[in-house]
Length: 158
Image (cartoon, rainbow, N blue to C red; front, side, top):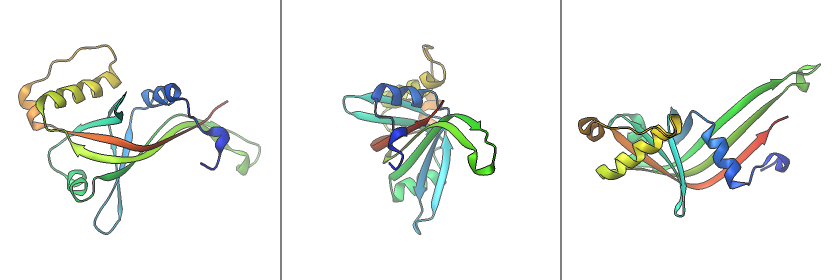
């Protein structure tokens, strides 16, 4: 990381920054290595086994086709944007928090694991609330897990 003074290494602060984000962008690569970036709602958890993001969506589409060809992905989240005005054009800046990384994307197949992942996603947007899921909808929903390989975090704030 070029700007070491902005690097965030405290795990709890990184988790708080992720909790404050409402979108995770996943970067996949097609066969010609053309990038494809998709914004997704997500759930996040850190366990003794590592860090994981969970996503849900349709059972067909470009994202899944690309994942099947190459499950290695990049990801990005950001929040707390604030323009810092200056006297001249190049004096402007932005306060922000961002998380970037790489990992491996895979399908979640077991019904119990899908429910757990859906709970994780819903808890990100509605902490503390309990949810019931229609079995037919769960079966028809694709659930993906991103196992984080590398993660870095930056914050530039007042």
